[in-house]
Amino acid sequence: MKKKLLSGPNWEMLCVIVALAWPTMLEQMMQTAVQYIDTAMVGTLGTYATAAVGATGTVNWLVTDTLSAVGIGFLAYISRAQGAGENDRARRASGQAVTMVLFTGILTTVLTLGLSGQIPIWMQVPEAIQELTSRYFFVLYLPMLPRTASIVFGTVLRAAGDTKTPMKIGLLVNLINIILNILFIYPTRTVELFGTTLTIYGAGWGVVGAAAASAIAFTVGGICITLVLYKHPTVSPKHQPLRPDKSILRPCMAVTIPNMMQRFATSLGFVAFATMINALGEVAAAAHTIANTVESAFYIPGHGMEIAAATLAGNAYGANDNKRMKHLARILLPLEIGLMMVSGAALFMLAPILMGVFSSSPEVIVLGTTVLRMVAVSEPFFGFYIIVQGVMLGVGKTRQPFLYGVAGMWLVRILGTFICTRIFGLGLISAWACMICHNMLMFVLYLRCYINGSWNPLHARPELE
Image (cartoon, rainbow, N blue to C red; front, side, top):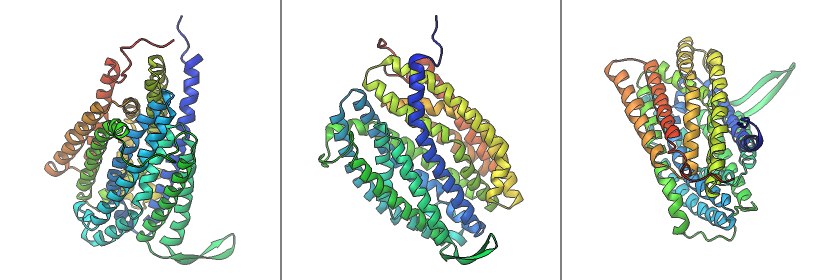
């Protein structure tokens, strides 16, 4: 007689999944809320201000996604070490994570600041706002070392099962960002509140003020998460040597490098995609920027559950527990697909309202609503493949995600968008159609992985009772 889906160990695993995933989802939700607020606040300064901020958004994905790959390598290593009960090995890996943060943080700072003047040109930003975009980018990327610490150390804490601390620090960062936005973006002004006239002081720095607010908030977040990591009871890098340790870095880099190449190639594809969109004109660029901002909130269930999937898969693999691995997939996949169906339905219905929050242009609202409703239909398929991908990364299987990610991005999304927009002269809708085709291809490829068992390195081994 078959067990009920949510009985016994399945119910216990569901509780663990929710405990790991909800803080990450809330953290991402708050980050997205601040992104919404940033876009709306800068949007009051005019279309050029919105375009200046949005034009380098995909470059931000390129940088942060590449750095996130470093964290994924340590997540796979530490979660497996903890699954095997080897806490000393996890602490040594945490010390090596500090070394990688110092190296990659300094290197990224030099590269981003050095290229800040060229990036707007490469992104085909209109000449009238290239200088403003360059200043915004330079200020935003000054604190790359603390930003790197936030990304990598946050992943180390999640690998140890602590998702609440990164969430709390994320909330603090977001609160600081909002307060400083109010003070830095706008000039001193008076407002009427309940019949009382109040004077709100401000620097009046505009777009650069938004970058400064984010830079300060990122710095505070990086410092806080570093202090928390050093006080952590199981993965503190305190007293651990910082010199490179090949026995730890080699398996970490075996996961990091393919994942970094995948993320870099994919994010570079986003940059190429945005460049082609920017060339379609101001309305298309504004609709694309705002629609991307709106859409990001509805992907939160996918990315939050992906972190839980990677961590728990690494634990199961470290414990050599095939039964637990199968339970994980059995619970995660239907849960994630259900969440993304609800998320997609909400996006479809709320698209025109949310577009109207960020723009008063009827053309921008109509165009953005159309592409958002198109992509809403594909969200459950995205939910499936992001979970299978997360499990594979958690157990160190990076070859297939790398090949799938690069092929899907460049052969479907980028090549398709180039043909549609540059050869046939089609607009933003065709570009987003290519993006949806990319998502559907990823679903088919990962479904094949799931059916043939290649997602699970333990599938040929006997289950532990």
